[in-house]
Amino acid sequence: MQIKLYDKLLDLSSPVVMAIINVTPDSFYKNSRTFSDQPILQTVEKALGAGARIVDLGGYSTRPSAEDVTQEEEIRRLSQGLDVILKEFPDTSVSIDTFRSGTVRNIVKNYAVSMVNDIGGGTLDDLMFETVGELKVAYVLMHMRGTPKTMHECTDYDNLTGEVIRFLNKQIAQLRALGVVDIVIDPGFGFAKTTAQNYELLKNMSCLKELDCPILAGVSRKSMICKLLDVDPTEALNGTTAVNMLALMNGASILRVHDVKEAVETVRIYNQYIQS
Image (tube, rainbow, N blue to C red; front, side):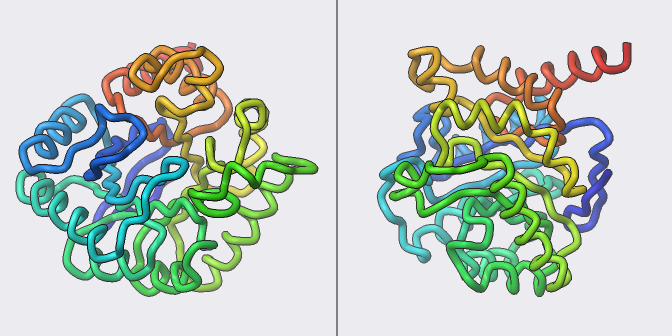
């Protein structure tokens, strides 16, 4: 399995790591906040050196109860980050983490961006699918309910895994009809799901393989780990590594993480395990 990222193909026959780069002052994991040029450059350099294959740049924190950020400010933050990253590392495959089609249109017009990572899965902006289809970029389709402010109230499911699959399947069909070829699916750990539901979905994640798209797992330092282990995000690296291994064993092709070195090592151990 492979996806096209801008002008090159990314082979996903072996799982890869996506590095989280937050150009925000309020992301839930404070050590990931980089909002000036030198910290951005240092964080990206460290991530690429450790083996990240994609850099995911976000200018809008989607943690529960996060403050709203105007589209203009989101674009300014992303532009600042991209100016730094692509000047020093022009061959980097960059994803932008946004749910706004206007942000996508502005950024893709001005920068060599490879992918759009949309937490809303097309539900937060009616023009997102049309925009992605027109601009011919890869797209991460995530499952969620509500908005970042209301998602904690939207956790009532009759059949969680079945509902996630039905949602993703419906959205994939819409994307395909608009000419979107390179689609990655994300079950949306932590978005409109309780701790128990997150682990239920993790256990059943291999069921998403029937959708025939690469699967992204984004569990890094999230509340599903912190609440279970009674730690804060700064203490959640060991738990993240454990959950990442479970995600790989259940079909993840991309791990979206704050800690690239540890995730790359997890992938290496997983590959050795399945080849033995």
